[in-house]
Length: 173
Image (cartoon, rainbow, N blue to C red; front, side, top):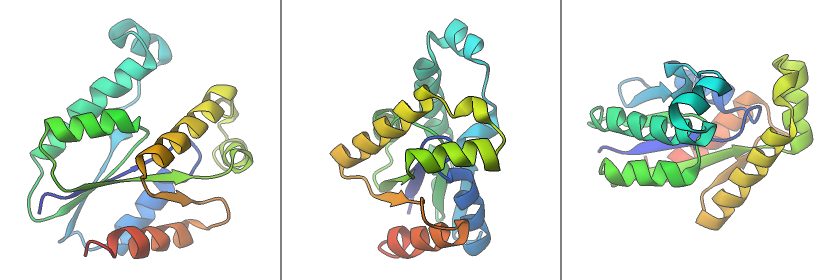
């Protein structure tokens, strides 16, 4: 009990879509679902003004989220989705005494990420070099930490959600 599974990845890899699909497939009696962005995401200017950088904001909010989720520990497995540096996740999990956890990276090709951001989400401003660098950073970080990576490039949302359930959850439940 007290397990948490964290889904992370860059914008456009399918995190939110897959997370929402997973919610429809798993029983609420056994799982609790939370999204990082439900707290709202301030402007770049606010992040810099209040936290020194976007990274500073992300780190502070990751720690706040893990403190909040620690209070939710119980009989349900927590599934938490958001864009987070895995070092921040691991530090926040340790501080809040999550002994049983799994981090999963959703990933896709850079071309697919850009296509989704531009065509599917109509957010061309996010299809930029910073997001491409973030995509590669997270991919490298996951590889170094031996964190499971689900490549959603050639998969539908349903296929990605089913892959998550059968390959990530199946080993635990």
